[in-house]
Amino acid sequence: MPDRAALQQRLNAYMAAHGLKQTRQRQVLFDIFVASDAHLAVEELLVRAQVRAPGIGYATVYRTLKLFTEAGIALERRFQDGQTRYEAWAKGEHHDHLICRTCGHIFEFEDDVIEARQAEVARTRGLTLVSHRHDIYGECMEPEGCTWRAAAGAHKD
Amino acid sequence: MPDRAALQQRLNAYMAAHGLKQTRQRQVLFDIFVASDAHLAVEELLVRAQVRAPGIGYATVYRTLKLFTEAGIALERRFQDGQTRYEAWAKGEHHDHLICRTCGHIFEFEDDVIEARQAEVARTRGLTLVSHRHDIYGECMEPEGCTWRAAAGAHKD
DNA sequence: CTTATTGCAAACGGTTTGCAGGATA
DNA sequence: TATCCTGCAAACCGTTTGCAATAAG
Image 1 (spheres, chains in turn red, yellow, brown, blue):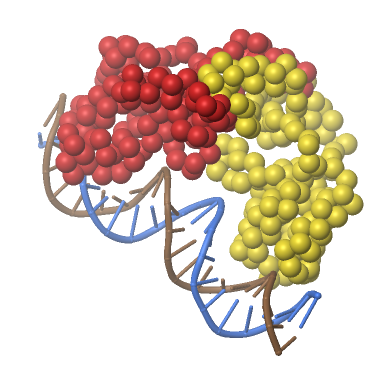
Image 2 (image 1 turned 90 degrees about the vertical axis):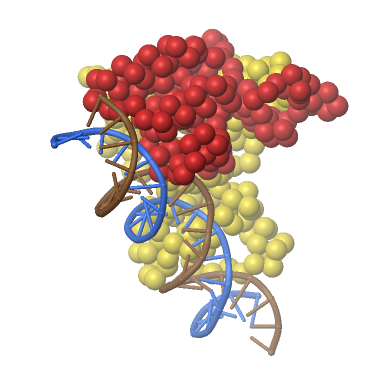
């Protein structure tokens, strides 16, 4: 979970550099966005934003999250449900996802062995690795459930 | 590249079991589909099909490829360009993809080390692995180019 | 002759855009 | 005040669906 101050600063710098303006809607979306360590879909963002910024619509959410992405503080993620989700991004950080088909929870993971093998796979074909997407889908093991379910109640987000 | 006869047989069995009918459109799409080892997008399928089945439209292509998928001979793949692509599928086979951002070629790969680590990642979170999607994006290394470009001309598909 | 299939056009769901009014610097 | 931003509604794009006409078994 990247720290709020760093993201705020990077966003401000980007806006200043591009002559963009600070608005209530942007601040509200920023707050919601960084306060949650979940992978929020556009609709979830919108619903939460409407509490503090009545009247806000999809267009603003889409435009603002695109801005966040261009500013380098948000990462767009598309899983298999046709919805675009966003997560806060600390530059340099990287991780992939493990999605539980039973409870819907999205875990993050990083594995150096897998990372290394990927570069190797690309190299043997004459390519340099640029990026990748790696989503693993699983199901809670019965009867214990996955570690997120097991910790249910402890989590707020 | 799975063999045509096996796919044809599996499709026929599926159709017989479900009381479905053989039609010109389905045969044309099947031929195009198995004749190419590329990852065809719906529009490409449609364009090629119209040569042998004038009048055929998107609806039929979508419905037919869904049928192929249900029959277990096609696999739906969604990469980052918003288009659904289909590839012929020999049951039991599995591979991931390496996409070249320079020339657009899609390589297939499989890596046992990566496969094994994935199961491990899931296990440590209390999940059993169900499936995964792993796409690597790269760029041709200059000046040689990727192995596909290097072999350009040799390939037909 | 019965049932499945086709092609068309309309509907869809998520996302993007044009525009006139409203807010920010 | 000049410019950017917002909200709305309409446009978009890939995909799905209802329907009447058509073809397969």
